Image (cartoon, rainbow, N blue to C red; front, side):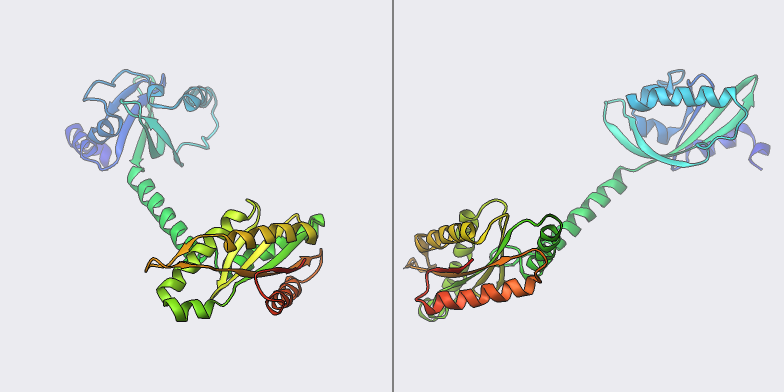
Length: 305
């Protein structure tokens, strides 16, 4: 039907199309671009006419485009690209790379020369929304795996890390030690100073444990005043040294309540070796039993390993 319309009506249709439209000849020169294409590329009306399309393409695509057009013209094979939607970036007149989706078609031969047309969609708004969505999902995932008060990983995150630790240990036979730390007499802190002070203590202890741990250790708040620890690559004796360093950091840390009162806080830690093939819950149960040994022995100490 369109080929029966007057040329002026067809041009008006193209000029007012929402999509950017460009027409090139078989030599790759731009022969037409509508208003949307001028906006997308940054070129004024008529400025890009006669210029090579490759000027809009990134360097890695420019040569590829020229080779493809030449190969298509020299063969009689059906194109695997024409008619397909592809996503890449074109170069704006300012040098900015603009992400687009493009569908190219063969317009046929006119006065002995073949022409190609392409419809381009500006993807910047979509990419921006995708980036915002991905950032939101990342924040939600982090919140789902983080303790709201201390910012440490929560029990869910610890369980997931434990599965990975067990898998690594099973594959490589690597040593790993599991620990459980508990704040001594935490109920007395809440009773004496109030729950706001208790929250301050939890945040401070979480920070002190994190600073005293190795970069490869995994620390999580798994409930109340309890923290779970993973020491990958350590045998019991070495894990005991690291755990005692953590214990000492908490004992010597300066913790001040919201009312300005300094609170002395200690922790007890129980350790257990995670042997390759051992169920993780078994190691955690042993660490919990070692923690009770530390508590019964007077607190502020490390047991097990």
